Amino acid sequence: MSQKRFSQLRDYEIPIGDSYKLDARKKLGSGAFGDIYLGFNIKEGEEVAIKLEPTHTRHPQLFYESKLYMALQGGIGIPKLHWCGSQGNYNILIMDLLGHSLEDLFNYCKRHFTLLTTLMVVDQMLSRIEFIHSRNFIHRDVKPDNFLMGRGSKKHQVFAIDFGLAKRYRDPRTGLHIPYKDGKSLTGTARYASINTHLGIEQARRDDIEALGYILVYFMRGNLPWQGLKARNVKEKYEKIKEKKISTSLDSLCQSFPEEFKIFIQYARDLKFEDRPDYSYLKNIIRQICEKNQLSFNYSKYDWILKKNADSSHEEQKENKNKDKEKDKDKDKEKDNTNNKDNTH
Ligand SMILES: Nc1ncnc2c1ncn2[C@@H]1O[C@H](COP(=O)(O)OP(=O)(O)O)[C@@H](O)[C@H]1O
Ligand SMILES: [Mg+2]
Image 1: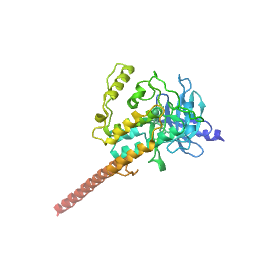
Image 2: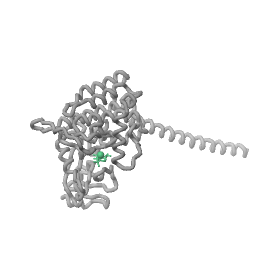
Image 3: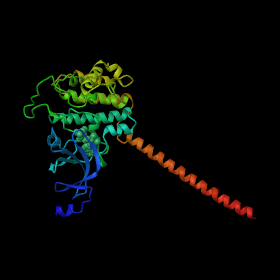
């Protein structure tokens, strides 16, 4: 049966498992550990995303990541896991196909989000993080590249992906928290890492929240002050980022933004290692900023949606103008013709 199905594959299509095919022409992204391709469920024709990892990689992590997806299934904004296995030289994970990442959309919007868009996405990112924490895991790589918008009926919803660095922070049965440790090397992405992560302290829930605080500022400023620092090697670079993060006052970091940004980051920095972040308190802060600025959440007003509408109506206008020009030319020609005719009289 599946043999028959697969016999109709084109040369750029690769069969995966019993029911999927990968489109080798359509790479969706490439990560540190492998590539992601567009694929299809052959039976239903449904589009999926296929994450590949070479089996001989030094630190395989795709099966670990699949366990995380399994543990998080059913959560709002968590992509569905379709299949996981090995084939040829690859470990393979198949999941829901999602839309663009927040980093892609940020670039599309010329690296600036309005306050409303910033708050609408950060509010959802906070909910995803709260859910992941509720399932006993910390993400440890909270950044705009790892949050994607959905597609179709879920295109307004923010999804969390990339659980390769996630870690269980408490025992699901006893609730016992992992022990405090230091001397650890940096896990995650330096730009968004918490100060404690730079200092080598074992990460906990508070560090996902601090990273989100930096993202809040990043979306509105367009960058963070510790970006683009020159260094001779990675170690020196991390050192410089750490120093700059520590020496930048929150006042100057959040200058010209609502003062609640500062409160958000300060709150995260003040949390103790085992503390449960007060997610509702943080959500209230977001709500307060909205109220003060007379904004209300409206998911058809994301910056990228408004820009796309504006771009396409601009295109339409251009097209119409061109059409008008063509019409004018035709009219002129007609006139010329009549004039010529007139002249013959
Ligand atoms: N389900 C998906 N749907 C669409 N694009 C995806 C999906 N998963 C990943 N991507 C794209 O691939 C990129 C890398 O995926 P990710 O899981 O973050 O891998 P890595 O661990 O290598 O960073 C993402 O930033 C995104 O652009
Ligand atoms: Mg990633």
